Image 1 (cartoon, one colour):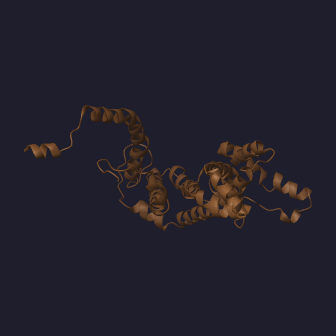
Image 2 (tube, rainbow, N blue to C red):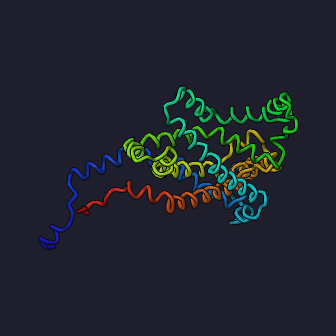
Image 3 (cartoon, helix red, strand yellow):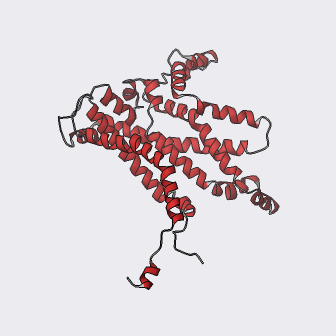
Length: 318
């Protein structure tokens, strides 16, 4: 090897090795934990999905893709998938505007602002079991909601909020919005507080009204926060399980039109003892969520992540 060739090769010095060792030391435990509790279970679920397996002993009854074919042709699963899609859209349409409106209000100097923030955020930190149990009791035909409507003379509005297929999904959306709107409001407030005050002052000097300022400054600069919240809302809606399972139980969710892919997985997998089929459903849910997440990141979040990427080493920017 000539001297010029040796000079052209990058040399890895002691400092570089120390840096790499530091990265391995700090990131190693997290990588091991992530691989053991996320990556490995996904591959095992995919493996068990090829068998008719009762959950104990090694799987031996290999059936290939039969579980997956059954899933994609089962009308109950397709209905559950439609419910998840409906929840995704309604969550974005209902929670987004309400959260922005609350954030605009709480971003002002108003009396009792701290108390209002706490009251809005409290439902988010309450456990889903408590929320589901409380709402389930209040929304029964003899529950507090119908009783209150009767006492104020609105008997015509009394309904079977949980079991009626025409309104059960809307009941679920109200509960979801009440539960998670606080998280969205906190995100929007954090995004608004990161907008420089100089922009508002300059717009006010130019004679812009309050709503013109919000439309031309706040909403555009709040775009990255809105897109991140929408991503979290979509993934959460696709994986919704606990509230539906607690309020509607094991079988009412189907007849009421509130079943989700996750409740279908538990009912058709664990409750029937068909764990191979349940693992196959879990893999399908994972793939659907993964495809949607990658697509969203590719076409929506790309504008936000490009600016965060650093330059590749060895490339000087002039």
